Amino acid sequence: MNMPKLTVPAQTRIILGHDPKTYYTVYNVGGVEFEEGSQLQYMGPDFFDWDKSYGQSDDIFLPKGIKYMASNAWYGGHVNVFVPEESKPEGWADDWCSASNEIIYGATKDNVVTIGDAVYVLYDNEAMLLHLRNTTNTYSLPETVAWDGKEYALTKMGNWCISSTWR
Image (cartoon, rainbow, N blue to C red; front, side, top):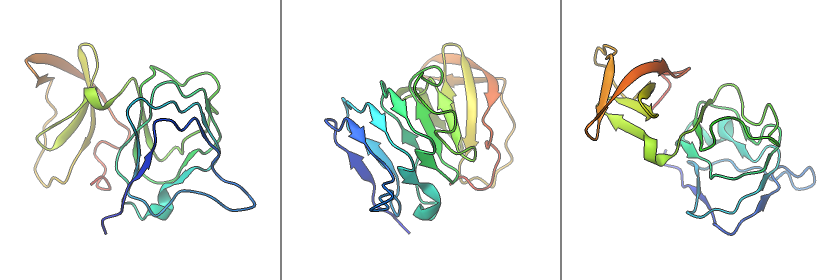
């Protein structure tokens, strides 16, 4: 099942999320994208319910500068949520994202790369193996990863990097 994506316009500053009166939660979509230059400052509770998207959601790259993230803003499932800040920003709830998701701080579309069957997050001189995609091959962990003429020491592995549930 190929699900459509929800694109959040750059001028959106507030997403209220779940409203008990209207039960507004985003689901049945194949992911959420934020337009370049996003001005998002506030994301309310239960905004995105991955479990109700039938496991079809893609990686989610949050925009830089979100000041407030409510409890369970990103709920359920097995999805990679990339946060450009180096750590959880002040003003974000401790449980802003379900524990079943992989939260990767310090990551943007620019430093997440696919090399063969593997997806890596590249930092200054280090690499994290995020996960293997659609592979039935035997995979040996390399000591280093080469990308764009630079070597990165493989020093980390994502929580779900060897799970068969990733697409």
